[in-house]
Amino acid sequence: MWAWWLNPAVLLAFEAQKVIELRLVRLAWGGREGRDEAVSMVTEKFAAAREATETLMGFGSIDTVVARYREHVAVNVRRLRAA
Image (cartoon, rainbow, N blue to C red; front, side, top):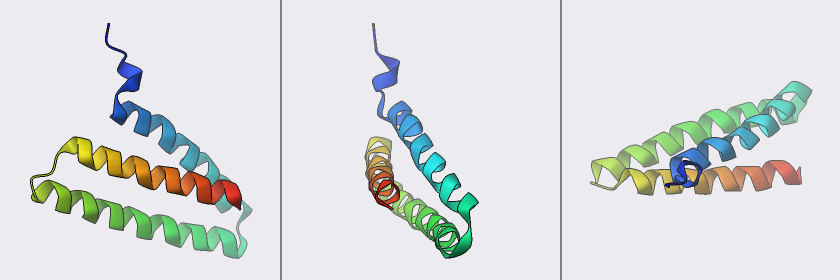
């Protein structure tokens, strides 16, 4: 039986929930950190979308895009937990 929860896209969805949680807390606290996080969030999303588009336009695979998004998510979790 195939373990659907080991699919990288499913793992990305679960991992992204932690970033959402940590970012919402930071945004809820407001102030300069909240404002900076909001700007960072939007900037990172545009950059990640551009990177994914470039990968796919260069005939890269969806697996490559998902793996790269998971790297971005891991970096954000480490950064947000440290603060």
